Amino acid sequence: MNKKGQALVEFIIVLPILIIILLAVVDYGNIVYNKTKLENILDDVATMYKNNESNEEINKFIINNDKDLKLDTTKEEKYINIKLTKNYKCIAPSLNKIFKTGIVIERKVYYE
Image 1 (cartoon, rainbow, N blue to C red):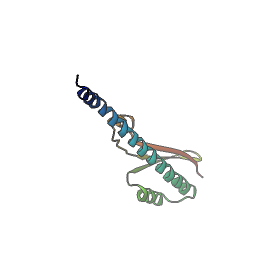
Image 2: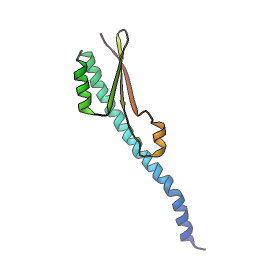
Image 3: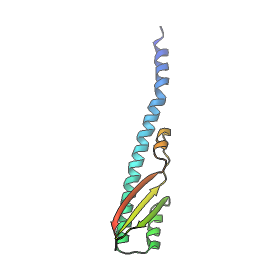
Image 4: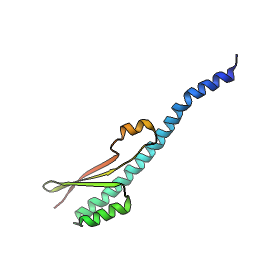
């Protein structure tokens, strides 16, 4: 019996699964990093809205931080909904199906 050949076949069968798990871990780390970055930017944007800064200044701030960000705002009576979206393409093929829309952060801010 050739034990080396058997171990090689088992390794070749398991290798793609290990690679996909490794890529998923790297993607998850990047997603958490980008989400934290977006939350920090959203804090600054919310503060800018509270200080009644113009939309041009807010858009400049967003573009200076990340050109791929998309800002959506909707005003309700005394509140404004701020939504930041960033397109993100995952390395692992299975995670692309989960994050089709990218990373989205929303916040409701009191606005006079």
